[in-house]
Length: 234
Image 1 (spheres, rainbow, N blue to C red):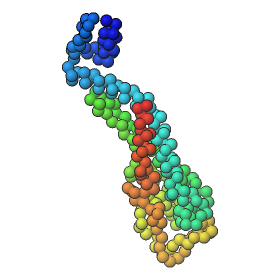
Image 2 (image 1 turned 180 degrees about the vertical axis):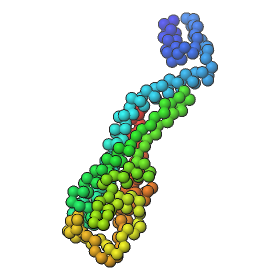
Image 3 (image 1 turned 120 degrees about the vertical axis):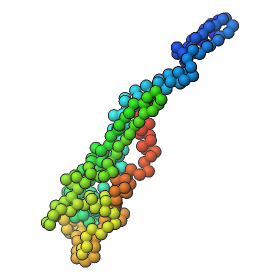
Image 4 (image 1 turned 90 degrees about the vertical axis):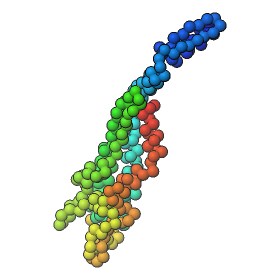
């Protein structure tokens, strides 16, 4: 009898109120009152409530993790490192002719803008386990970057939109009649422009809207991103 009662109590805990029981000392019978559909809905409701609770609890933590990861990926990209390479011949810093001290502040502004664009949008999961979790990283139109004060530098005859050249102009010729000459002179201390030839963004750094140093820094990060996103259900 004691064993039968223990088994019944365990089964009652598992099935909740969706069952009726009767028992004798020698056997236990179980009759389901709710339909299979009702039981499925009850299970889905319990699961969805638990998912929603965990996602809401962990969303801020996951967003912070995602921002830290993206910060590292962008900050260590070859282009950002080259932008900061003050006085180094053939660097982007030198070829764009950045004034001393500008490369570091420009790189920091770009990284911050990308990181600040990150967001998580959550639509609660329903009884049918239908819901949505959207992660946003960097607008495709690049407007947050191209409107930065650091996205261009002032020169004698106007401004030099270096970030647009780097992100969107690909291998297009930018300057005709002048070419970059490495050295230890010029605004950057890493070279200057001399007459003849042409200039474009070096191919190893160039980009277009859907393939630039931002997209390349995020490409192939699925394993790391999946690990971060799984934190929503911790």
